[in-house]
Length: 289
Ligand code: PXG
Figure 1 (tube, rainbow, N blue to C red):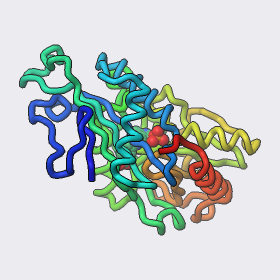
Figure 2 (figure 1 turned 120 degrees about the horizontal axis):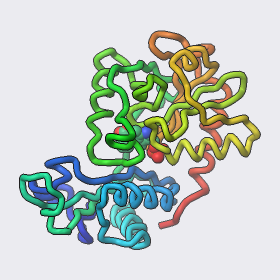
Figure 3 (figure 1 turned 90 degrees about the vertical axis):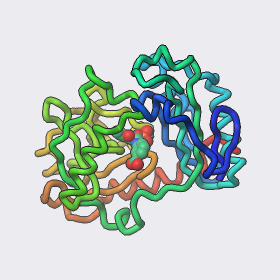
Figure 4 (figure 1 turned 60 degrees about the horizontal axis):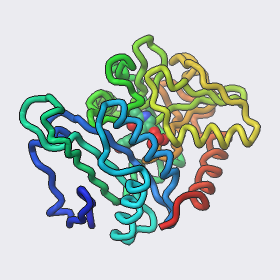
């Protein structure tokens, strides 16, 4: 495996950054998770745009242009001879001292690109659906650390994941500070009721997921009525279908929430249709390498 660090490639065992890097010391940095299918990088521009937006918001100047970043991703994929891959793009504030002041980070951010494989869930979960739970840890408040920023500080989501695992569940629903459904630890959430599709709006402690946007687009094209609307837990419980979306998990059905069986208890028709259409899109759309 060849890992990109600041313009050079290193073998996995040699791919290291300083223990003084503020990405490690404070989670001071941003990241993206991107997928490539069949030598096509899916939604590469959208991911790079979001990376630059996250960086801009935390006043982190990425030392590459967007085009240079795109080329670096493509080069990393070529170096690793992977036709299907999961790409992790990381930009940290760089090396500083033991104080948190980012001005002491010498103005040299660390850029890392890893191309590997990922399988969050086995095939059986895509066929049978997940059992998930609402957890006590709420999603970060937008006025504290806005969930639109894909920062390296993911402790909010990791705490929720621990709570789900402690309860023997596969994923966690995180509420926003008002008690509405926000999202899961690394996925957006959708429900289906009477053939209408609902997902929480991005303003309520919810990341505007790129897979989420893609599903909304497919659904609109299919003349499915879509609503970006606040959702309560009750609305999830009484939904006909539920599924999660994310780059890593793709589209995965949910069949049980907080002990309540969703719909028939099996992945729903609309969910399965969207999964099929999403898969077809990933096979033909993307940036070639
Ligand atoms: N919400 C959150 C909080 C995320 O971190 C998504 C939604 C889905 O967004 P995209 O753009 O990928 O459709 C994410 C992205 C993991 C993992 O291991 C998940 C993400 C990032 C890194 C790791 O589950 N999620």
